[in-house]
Length: 345
Ligand code: PHE
Image (cartoon, rainbow, N blue to C red; front, top):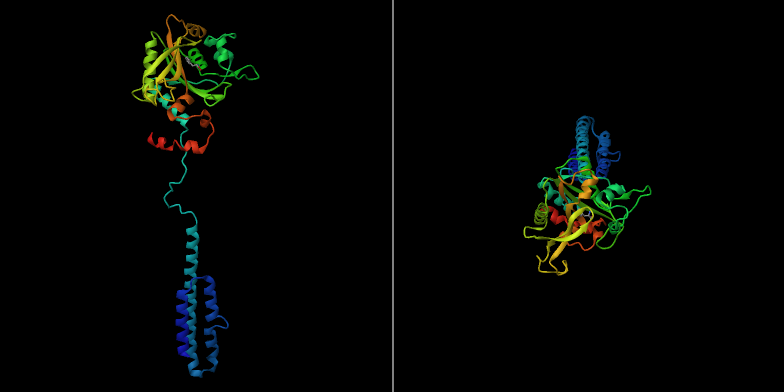
């Protein structure tokens, strides 16, 4: 019987060291310590022993039972700990390094081009100004030398609001607001949304412009040309040339449209420039005396130049975007193409 006791203890310890599931552990407990268990059976047999043996064997059996109980408790701890660790391993491990697959937001190409333009003029000492998108007729047209019957109003298909105001058709009304609120010398750039009832691959009913205005004494067309030449080189590359073609705007006199040498063929002629080697990028001119008069500045002492460019147009040229609507669709496939360029900046 002593041998049985030793065998029970060593069998049970063996089994406990190998057990891997709590269920299996409970089965073992029943098997050894349960009412029909091996140890219990042996203890029941005590009565059959001679009196003198009974005490010693009983004590030995009790010790085995105590040790096995302890071993069961330890095995249970071990299995519970393992189960807890397995469960934790399935949850998010905050100590793991982040994955590259995280989608990072990036600057929209339109905003990128806008901030490049503003950055160039900022380096020349221009400040940023802004004005309302819902304008009145006086700021948008009349003060800019476009009286109500002026034919130039037809060029800009205007959205009117029910209360007789309008969505500004260009950023030029901010020229007026700035000159009314500040004394010269002035040097401002005005980024912002403008609205015209027009839509095709190169026109959107809402688009963005950057207006420029310089007002000071002794400003000449040479200042305008030098400024725009610098801008073109900064924006499109050091080899870029500009040319001025005479044009008309009611609020500038003389007026010009400005072309840059084609940024794709360098001036040789290609599809983008229509084989002429030049691409139009903005309108400009010397501030018309009638505009100075509207804001109460004496044209005799004050000169100035102004220019206005479409940001979409420049972004489309820069990135060879064939359809203006791509800039407003928010299609991720389109925007993702600019990820590489973002990193280069
Ligand atoms: N406001 C003109 C336009 O929208 C652009 C312009 C601005 C031209 C300033 C001359 C001077 O077409």
